[in-house]
Length: 134
Image 1 (spheres, helix red, strand yellow):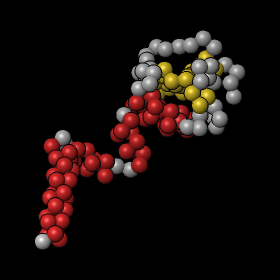
Image 2 (cartoon, helix red, strand yellow; image 1 turned 180 degrees about the vertical axis):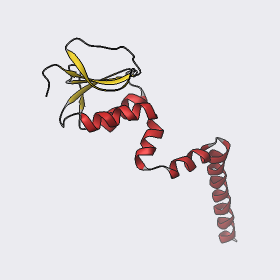
Image 3 (tube, one colour; image 1 turned 90 degrees about the vertical axis):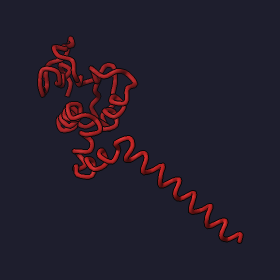
C-alpha cells in the first residue's frame, strides 16, 4: 500500500514537471527558438543571441585588435545585457575609459579627438584607433 502511494505521488510529480516544460516550450514559442539555435553553428548562435550587427562589430574587433589592447564601447547603454555580452566576447581585451581603441556601435557620425578611423563596417559601426597607439 505504501509503495503504491509513493509510486502514484512520483508519477504525479513527473507529470507536473513534464507539463511545466511543455508549457514553456510550446506556450511561449520557445520550441521554435530552440529549433533555430540547433541548426546554427557556434558563431551563428553567438550572432543570433547577441544580434547580428553587434556581433559583426565584435568579430571585427576580435580579428583586428592586438592582444592585450583596451577598448571603449560607444552606443550601448551602460549596464545593458548587450554591453555585458560584448565584454564577454571581447575578453581578454579590457574596457577602459582612456582606451587605445573605441568601438562604435549604432552611432553614425561619431568621432573622438585624438583618434583616427581604424576599421569600418558601415556608417554606424566602426573602430577608432588612438593616435600613437600600437
